[in-house]
Image (cartoon, rainbow, N blue to C red; front, side, top):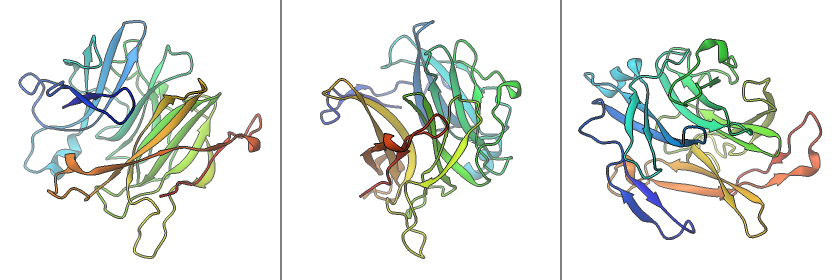
Amino acid sequence: MRVYSSPDLKKWTLENENALNTETRPYGIYFRPKVLYNKNTAKYLLWVNHLPNDTTPLAAYGKAGYTVASSDSPKGPFEVVTEAAALSEGSAGDADIFVDASGENAYIAYNGWYNNHKISVEKLNNDFTDSLGAQYNSGYISPAKMEAPQVFYREGWYYLLYGHTCCFCKEGAGAHVQYAKDPLGPWTDSEVELNPQINRQGYHKIAGQNSYVFRIKQADETYGYVFANDLWSTAADNLKSHDRQYWHQLEFDDSVATEKVAPAIKELEW
């Protein structure tokens, strides 16, 4: 699990070739790593999907979960502190982790293999090393068969983006938008699709699947938000780790916002 750094998003430096030690971590397949910082413990927490050993990867999905590791540095090394997080929904799917506006609390947005891929948000413990369970779950936010959630906070609003299940699909998936004042809801469906389908073959405007949104500081000291998604089946050598990504700085329309309606996000453009 490699860690890179960059001062400008153009020049990149490999900081750690093996940030989650292959010799000490539980055996299995790892994917979709996410890292956040806990200012109270001064620790960086890595949450990563983990498929334990089984006859096939598909068979392992029924036992999927999240492994959590901790480090004093974003470069690692990360040491496992929770082998299988105790989420209220079993057999975990795609996820995103995020810190709230106060910087004190963290949450995970995720779907489950056994709930027909419905997305919910759940609060983490004070150390960000495990979930607080069903008592701190939002309930289902999305319809069934949705995955790849992305959550970010901007000027008083939390945004949740997700798309239909596509599992490495080369035609891409949607980026539907919901918003809320609190991570546990209530969430409002904006009825906006940032990445619409463009033909009968199922291809979307951007032929990729949601990965994450990250915040960047701009020249005027304000923050911009960069949407990233995975362009599956674009690697010349067919390795998933070599598939390319699409990055797009999100554009917001603050003129439509009210006390109950979040600023709109403009549709993606290639």
